Image (cartoon, rainbow, N blue to C red):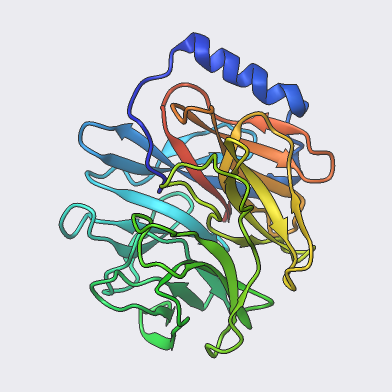
Length: 324
């Protein structure tokens, strides 16, 4: 997850943030046509002990629940059908992660894989029966496609020194990911971009190019954040720190068209699309990244509803899960 400062935002500043968020997009109630889904997101209830938890809530912001409620780190970046998938260090040492599965209520938790994983986004294909994951560097330097029992089905070598945050596109025939020609953000000249590759490891292609004239991004910021594919329009969405803030951008799979997706005064980073493509859920941060909320955007009207409040400072990385 993104590195964030650990200072508490005052109620007054939170009010300013909410005002700014309404400046560009109207704030309205979310219609109930997505009531079959819940939103999964990550919360930092205890910064002193680095204790992250996975929460769920309804798409109107009601019924918020901490369903992991464990010591250490639990993070979720994606779900499949009515199953939530999350990283946890509950059975190991702090920040040594393995993959777990549960239903959206937090019941029936099971360990999916014994492979130590990097802190990376992942994705599903073949009706949720195969997952592409990023092993920890101490394990391997390639992407793994695994089944729901944790068995390795396929390994994908990108040929780049840095490959992270893979997601299936084009019905699982290709993979979009963050890649770079340097191994670490700390190396001079590191620049992450969105690449695609075929699922057999061929056809590597760079889709994005960070503006050479933009010098506003801190060294640790995403030039291109974790990609997602819009379910019906088929473009790839990603966050990028440009012109002094994070915003969401789109790029077509052929790389020929690039555009800014939203017009929001707040910073948008981690996000997800509803399965029908009608809704965008994203975290929203003030420009100093002192407070993160979760917002739901009607993709047709661009109307926004902020679903969280000031109960927690960091509320990030939302994704949709089907209620059962």
